[in-house]
Image (cartoon, rainbow, N blue to C red; front, side, top):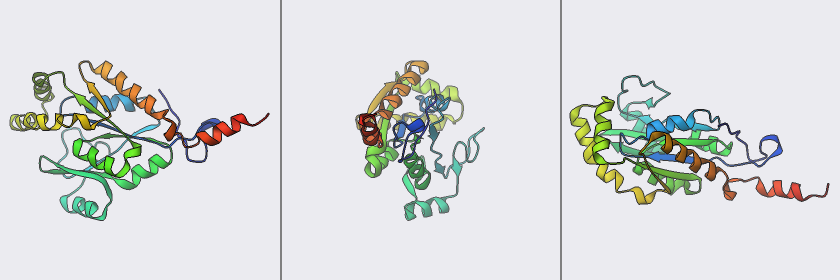
Amino acid sequence: MSNSGSGPDGGPDGGVARRGLMLVLSSPSGAGKTTISRALLTGDDNLTLSISVTTRAPRPGEQDGVDYRFIDRGRFDAMAKAGDLLEHAEVFRNGYGTPRAEVEAALAAGRDVLFDIDWQGTQQLGEKMRDDLVSVFILPPSTAELERRLHERAQDSAETVRARMAEASEEMSHWPEYDYIIVNLDIGESVRQARSILEAERLKRDRQVGLRNFVERLRRPQ
């Protein structure tokens, strides 16, 4: 799947210009949002991942500037105070946030931005840029399956897994705040559903900022 972006003055091949959207995927840790995010990014050259800043240490295999931008607490707090973060939150005593400038530039250029953030960040994005936001909450099929996935991932200690399971109930209570819900029974089907949401949202009339001019050109006598 490949989709060309477009700026405010015209779309690709003389088509309809479109403003980009912010696609948020949220879930309890281990429910599948990262796997779904990676699948959406594959083969879609108009979808780019928002790289968050975080104060936590890198996990095995993570790369600075690819998975996160790893920064110290002082810099994080300075960015939040200056308004340079669209959203930020504390998760397990670590700071996470989304740099503002890169996202706003992408949307204006007609590019879509994918976010892998929690409900706190989603609320903040909604307060600041609700018209650009499309939010999806991913639920596990059961709490037992969620715990199994966390243990299987083997990235966290047993103590951290227990903490994440305790937090999952609170996180899942925020599902009514989201536009769409996906129950991740099967990862392939969940990816298909997420792609369908993205495609439909791209076609919304209000996002096609060049539509009026496009239709006027179509109606002109030849």
